[in-house]
Image 1: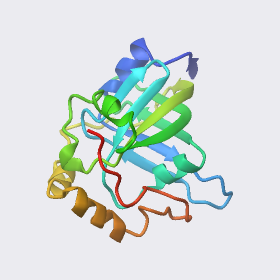
Image 2: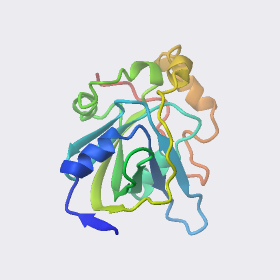
Image 3: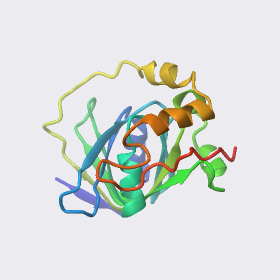
Length: 195
């Protein structure tokens, strides 16, 4: 049923690029640390950079567990499920890195997301993942669900923030600069954008 792939191309690439939602999973090195599983969406915020590298835009939120775990150990798994059409689940296991707004690579990476305006969403970083293992499985038990459209609430909420107010918002949140387990999260004050 399951198959391992050399990279992300052809049918596999088409499948993951067509999905409106995917999930990220990370964990700290500590055996009793908090595992993190996050849904990701917003059309245009995910990109396949090459057959071994993917990236997604990391927007404002109430915590920064993924960033903290990646800064500590780099381990990440991404997962896509077919909620429509033939059943399928694809996982990319790999090493991830948060590229912050003051990183010289930020502008070139951001150009890889031409179909989304990140400004209203409080863009914090771009998460770049290098695939080490790419697998699919049947997905026979995943239910059918219909995608209607992206919610507009995130953009409406964060569109009213500029860099200063966004930085103040992050500073007030308990688990932005430091993870649930006390790991370094998003660098604060918020790094200025290089673009």
